[in-house]
Image (cartoon, rainbow, N blue to C red; front, side, top):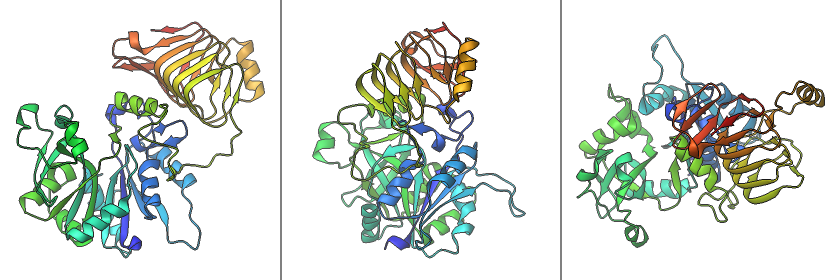
Length: 422
């Protein structure tokens, strides 16, 4: 049964709402939790479910994503498993790039033709969750559905941000509305668990996770002009009265679509019992780095997640995530922040030259105060720098970007000694 499933991870979108984190990389390549990339989440869910034939569809800013997948996912020569990249391509029969989620899968089907499979698992590359896909595939087979959509109960406050589905007593979907305004929600309630009902989460939102029976998907994608699953394929399938199953998921799930949601998801990992539990028995896989353990000198840590290879002399790190190879100077205080870390270490010679020329080194210098901030990869923050997003108005600047009281220091930015961004 495991070999009857092919998984397809959609990783080609521009991710404009995650700017500036997506200025030079695709959304699935954005670093999370100090040592992972967003794409590691759907791939890990597949591998933990026993599905190891995975294609990742890429298009925009895909170089770092392609490199990460190439360096991370290697299988034994005795295994049939793989994680392969299918990049958007121009061919003699088609010069257009991907025009939507469904179009991306349509143009990739020719690469799947040589594989033996009955079901296609279609996943987003920018969500945070832990799910057993085997259970979902099993429900799909038992129900005889053409399509199964993973759904999650949401409240009336959150429903306008999602495609909302209505199901009957057999969990078969009967209708769909895309991002309905609050005043049109009455009548769209579905049967949910008593726990979800008690929380007022009675509307079923599509999670963007689909299982198609192979022949059905090929049939649906043959229709011209159908470029997007959520906006066109699914509404048309409902209108055609195809059997579509709602697979209701009650666990933690979040769509990493904006800077505030990205920030909240990462800071949430520092909780004593986080909603997304990295210490679960099912691991999140990522690139194995041969880094030394992190080293601390005089640092007070409270609700801090620290990745490998860090050299930290900060006086305090609280409610923050510190990424790989981070270097933080003496007397620095970091609160409510995510520092992504660095791709490399500076040599002793480079560190000495920076000190002699009074230039910031890679990382954070001495006596800094950092609050409500995201520091992208390879930032150089000088001494006596103060950064506090809670006091700032939205704006896009040379070295940083501000939205909803969160300041994002851009990748490779240099912040000179004594700078105040507050």
